[in-house]
Length: 193
Image 1 (cartoon, helix red, strand yellow):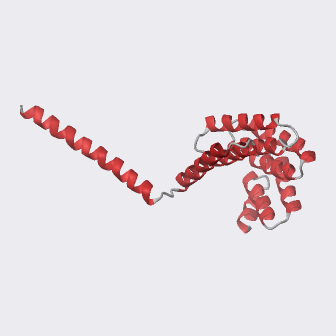
Image 2 (cartoon, rainbow, N blue to C red; image 1 turned 45 degrees about the horizontal axis):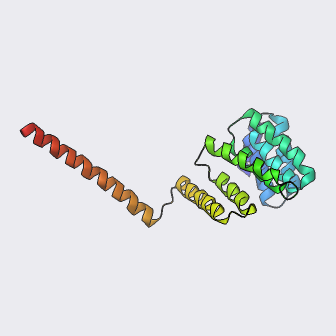
Image 3 (cartoon, rainbow, N blue to C red; image 1 turned 180 degrees about the vertical axis):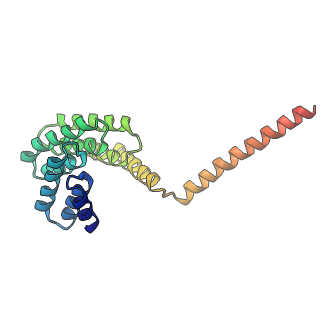
C-alpha cells in the first residue's frame, strides 16, 4: 500500500494508484473506503475507466437500486475506451443479475459477451460470464464448454500448460521439423539430378 501512497503523493490524480487503494480496501472488507477511493479516482481523472468499472461492481452488488448507476458508469468507461473488456464483462453480469425479473436481459447479456469476444477472443472472464448465462438458460453443455474455454484462456495467458499440451506442442514442432528436413532432402535430390 505504501507504494500506492507514494505514487499519489507524487501525483494525487494518478488513477491506477487510487483504484489500487480502493481494491486493497475492498480486499480488507472496507467497502465504504473502496467506494470513496473509486469515486475519488473518477473525480480526479474523468478518463479513469478502472474507477468507473469498480464503482459499477459495487453498485451492482446493491441490487436493482444500484444497477442504474452501475450501467451509467459502465457506459462512461466504454465511452472512454470502447474496447475496455472489464466494462463489457461487468455489463453482462449486470444484465444477468436483472434476468430474474426480465428474461430479455439474458439476451442483452449474451450480446454483450458476443461483442466482447469479437474484440478479444482470448479474454477469459467473458467466457465465464457467458457460461453463467448459458447455465441460467439451462444449457448445461454449452455452459460447460464456455467454462472450459475460460479455463483454457486463463491458463494460456498465465503460461500454464498440462503435460498433454506440452506433448502436443512438441509433436507439432517435431512434425514441422520433419517436414523441413523432408523438403531440404527433396531439394538436394532435385539439385543432384
